[in-house]
Length: 196
Image (cartoon, rainbow, N blue to C red; front, side):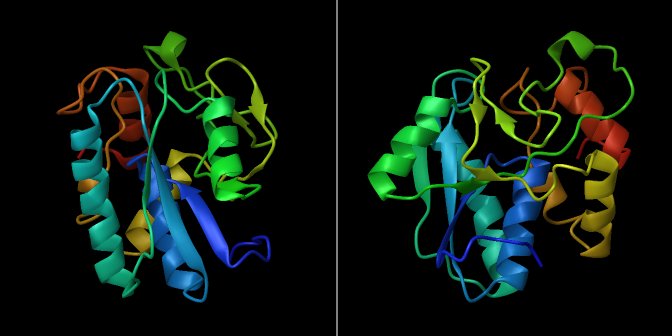
């Protein structure tokens, strides 16, 4: 399904959000011959134990749905609200890999109430832009030309809207429940017509 490098091991950045959760689902559904390894970056907005708990539920559900056994899940620390270039580079060196698959989508073509907080981690050509403005070149972004409404259609096509979708988390204003007001919640509502 995806045009992936020939590597046997596929590393996937898994935030626990809508996009990376769907990406992990599709990779394990259509590339069962690969050793797919989620890489979970713990950022400043959520304690590590909560991130492990939230993303762990997503990984367990995907494992059950696709009958896929993950060989390894990596939990890494990152500073800020999203991983930085150096976070990825450090991981690449430690694990001797040269790329990571990211579930980055394009931004909606409309303005939201909180547009000043919009996601700036998406470049025009689908590359990941780190919080410090550096572009991460060593990545694959299969959803780069899709936005949240396209992702929502995939959730409905796979019948994931009532099991996987409610486990995902997008809000950066609140760590326990979606605030419904931040840019991320607005994008979620725009794409899916609901928050959870």
